[in-house]
Amino acid sequence: GQQLNQSPQSMFIQEGEDVSMNCTSSSIFNTWLWYKQDPGEGPVLLIALYKAGELTSNGRLTAQFGITRKDSFLNISASIPSDVGIYFCAGQGYTNTGNQFYFGTGTSLTVIP
Amino acid sequence: EAEVAQSPRYKITEKSQAVAFWCDPISGHATLYWYRQILGQGPELLVQFQDESVVDDSQLPKDRFSAERLKGVDSTLKIQPAELGDSAMYLCASSRGQGNEQFFGPGTRLTVL
Image (tube, rainbow over all chains, first blue to last red):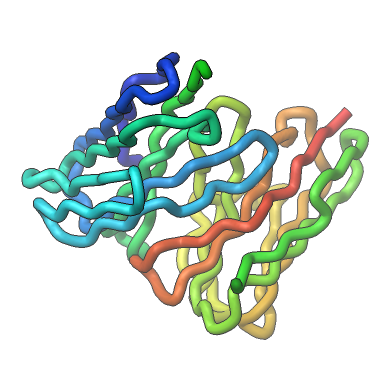
């Protein structure tokens, strides 16, 4: 299946710092999604991207759909303790059975007060 | 706010027993997904429904797993018999259609002893 490489695997930052993480694919995707997952809960959708080059913001979060359609970036500005969690990217591509989303391995974020 | 409902939230069973999980998607969402998430990894698709039809079940271990969405609304995922390696979080998600952003339920945490 298609592989999504997400980096970094984990981050430890001070409260107030900015955060950047990215996701790369071996294949072209048509949609990129970014999720946050707290322990024991389901992923919560943060941002959806539909066009190459698209830059979308949601509060302190900003995500971009890479021009090559093989990557996406998520930035968090002025981090706060509640930003702690695991962030997943998901890319949507076509398979012989239709549209399917593939998930990255996650970036674990720890914010130190 | 509309949400995806799942039950039970937690399930502990012994190997060789049968287990079943239930999912009620967001009203009006035609596409329903079941994912399995192993600790420390991203969700992996098990089965995808479009209304009552299976679109993709290529990753579903069909010797022991089954899924149905008889009326095109709620869905059930069954495992029989459960094995130790089935211990994981089982997530249900729904979307308006294929390729649209997916919304996840809280998940069912399965532990097989």
